[in-house]
Length: 356
Ligand SMILES: Nc1ncnc2c1ncn2[C@@H]1O[C@H](COP(=O)(O)OP(=O)(O)OP(=O)(O)O)[C@@H](O)[C@H]1O
Image (cartoon, rainbow, N blue to C red):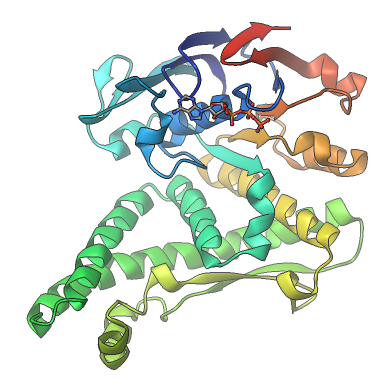
């Protein structure tokens, strides 16, 4: 999978920039000072391919300050993808034809693994980030995942709104509970399947990086038995009345990360935690490659230069050979000749791009 052309229009700090990359270029590096716009370029790729930003709270944040719309366009293996965000909403097209629903567009789009400094929060912070990780991977592994997730989220918001109203009826709550159970059971089934595939691959990648006989494990912790959400919601009515919100379902799932059977957040050293997170991302790349038959693009924001040489080499060796790596860095001091030879480089300076 190869992105050979990318154009950003009024996206973040960019006015109108375009770059072209040789199809065969295995690594593309964006080099520049802090706040030059490096992350925004990788973010634009993620938005173009997955319709999701790894950092924006709302898609409107992506529109350049003072402008009324933003666009990203790119050429992926000969297909032209276009994403436009304006006050009237989002418009998607594939080869010049309106795509309508996200699912139609994503069927033509590509796969992505995002790696950034915040990844360590997968271990250290709460379940939100781990659920986002599962959802990001799930929507790339299973074509219907994203649609079910959106339907689940909509029903959850409506039901939680109703639960705060004093005059709500049991029938109203039950109608939304049925939607939650339908989509929630599908989501937890997919999550269970996904973690079962990711965990052994992550364990293998972890051993490769650490060089030690440690056992890393990802364990899916559903808040309700997969397939049993309707009963779990019914059984939690007392709790719901007290808390005025839906207390079971995929929005309460978690993913336990363990090293040698112990919780990594509590007992792992910083190095062990970082290794585990790298292993999870390598596993994501390998499993997506295996399941979808295409190697994902690897977007690496800042972290490459911060890894020690051996981890950097393990990471490069661990990713699918066919994956293109696009990375950002403030300096190339860390890069050895072998990597520099393979890297197409662009200098980023306050919203401009230049081939180096
Ligand atoms: N919607 C927006 N419109 C205009 N500028 C924006 C918008 N959103 C963010 N910016 C600015 O864009 C600039 C580039 O941010 P970006 O995070 O891409 O830089 P970076 O090169 O990755 O920096 P760092 O190395 O510090 O991570 C920042 O100055 C940021 O404040």
